[in-house]
Image (cartoon, rainbow, N blue to C red; front, top):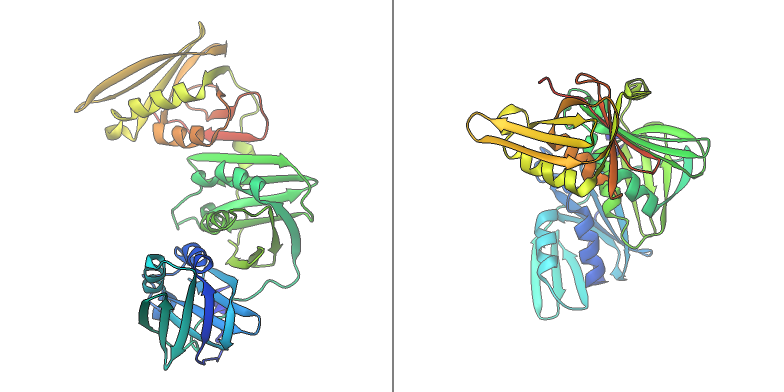
Length: 377
């Protein structure tokens, strides 16, 4: 995408437009995280405002993600200008009224809203990167609610370490009427699987940050279109598009680490387990957030943690235990991440010894599985 997106569009002319203030605020709010204030390319600190016969378009990119918003509006003069994104966002958010008028001259953007007037120094749009469109490829329709629910169940497990780029993405697969999302950082793995036909079959690894930006754009939207190209994906919304690179490479064969059976299974109350782990984690900072779970066949799970400096903690939870029981230690933060994504009141935990991966699932429902590697005791 970087090669394509750096192509230049040689256009620059003064603009004169009127916009609904709240629509402008909403669009700026959604591009806020994409405007790159730390880029070595100063132009990426800017947003592009383009006025044409079709209306006003707002554009932002950081070379990884590019977004375009169609704002409508009344256009009295066609043209294009770029202005510092942070300055524009802070200014527009501080205004009140119904309509805002934007007028540029000699690369200075004049902004009028009621009795408030401001001028923002801009730059010509000649050097602003052009956001490419995905032509052809696989095209599918995604329900917004489904997308949000699935991403919420996996996004926290993606890696933030650039040393293994493939793990910084979410593996999105559509195959034979089933959609799956998978994320892992090699210490834990989360998978969401839903039976739903969305169109063509495909498999692609998309940066988790891209999908999180997509999720933020879905308010009030029933569905959107996803176009999967060779090295890019494009999300098409009612009044906006978002284009992102894909992460190239083969996603790890994660199925091989999902245990096929377990020696012990316990069903617990999600809120009770969550609260207990939060408290136990207070005493585990010195030991990689290590918290020990001891499952007893009589239906008790004892949660313990300790620190030589801070002290110790112990609490017992009641649960329905099947199997021989045992003890295992986890990073409490990792377990809490998974529990926070569950929407059922009960969850199940399965284990097969202190060195095998632990498996957490929402109870009495299919479709979500969360695997956490244990810590050495």
